[in-house]
Each structure stands twice: as structure tokens, then as C-alpha cells.
Amino acid sequence: MLVGEAGSSPSEAYTISAPAAKIRRGKDVRLVIANDEGRSDCPRDDVLVALLGEARSCYDLVIARPERSLKQLALKTNRCRERFAQLVRVAMLAPDIIENCLDGTQPMRMTARTLLAAELPISWDGQRRLLGFA
Image (cartoon, rainbow, N blue to C red):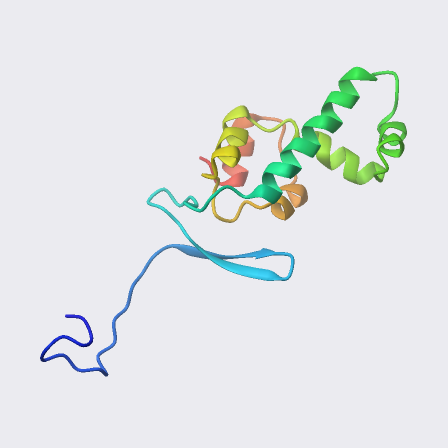
């Protein structure tokens, strides 16, 4: 019975349960409701997608200039060596993880910040487990 229907009491409380997560984006905090698989149904995360693009361009630079160190390549792109190395690791995500991020169906807690902070395994199966895809 909904509040406002005949015979209902306005003091009657209803509880709605759904898997959700508070996601911080800079100063903003959003409440994201998960679908049946624990994934976000929100439009894709443009910050996460931009990070994947940035990571791919760093990876392409490493492949194009194998004679240069990460430190040299980082300086060339005006990044610190640590950030550059993080981006190269992100570029080696499993293809299905990248597709889910582009589609906006990544796990709710997967953000650009959490992805950069993660100690990503080399194995794609390990990445899926760590990031909540398996």
C-alpha cells in the first residue's frame, strides 16, 4: 500500500533495498544503484574513458620508442615517471574490461581513481577478479 491511498497511514514506513555505492568524483558524491549483476546502469563514466584513452596513447608511445626509458617518455609528455608507468599498466587491461568501461557497464566501484590506485595483475583473469568482473 502506498502512502496517500485510502486507508493508509502517513506514518507507515517503507523500505526499498538495492545494491548501491557512493562514488566520489572530485568534490561530488553520487549514489549509484547496481543492476542485477552488481554493475552500474549509469551512462558511461567519461573520466574513466578519458583515462583509458590517455593510457592507450602512453602505451603507443612506449611501443613507438622502445629505445627510450619510461622516464624519458614521461618527460616528453609532461608527466612524472610514476604517473606514466601507471598509465602504461592501465593500457594493458583485458579487452573485455575496456569494452565494459566504454559501454558504461563496469562494476560500480570502478572509477579512474580506483583503477590508477590498483596493483593490476598481468593476468587478465587476475584483473577481472581484482576489479570485480569475475
